[in-house]
Image (cartoon, rainbow, N blue to C red; front, side):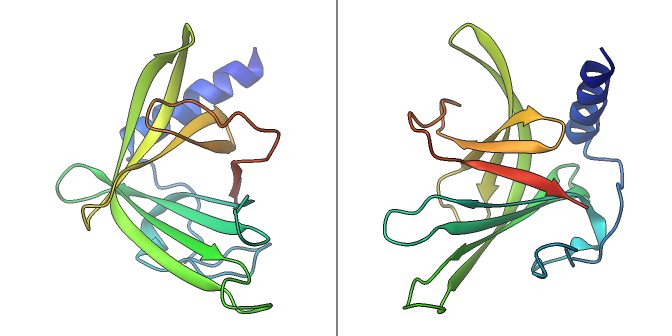
Length: 157
């Protein structure tokens, strides 16, 4: 019951996008990676290495910001393709835009997810809320990959 209440509290905070969680000035303790963008207002930062077709993986660093002047939440997503240009030569891309919490019924279960819509007009990216510290990359129907591979990013402090 305690975990359920904690989960509800965190989802409520994410939906409102108004709480100012702990501020880390863009520096993550474990990963030693700096998140690009205005991260002094970050509500939450998530990190994980997801599978890649032609390399050892893609490191995702997602920073969800507090509410902006237009009333919406912003985000910064840095994707780093590990060994993209040869061993030890990574290639990073940064996406910024609006973050919106959505809910859908998938296989008769209600799911809550982030819809990340880039400012540059590219297709949105979706992360379903797994629990109070974990998001999972999913498709636009909020369906998970049919695979044993790990598509989770974990909140860092």
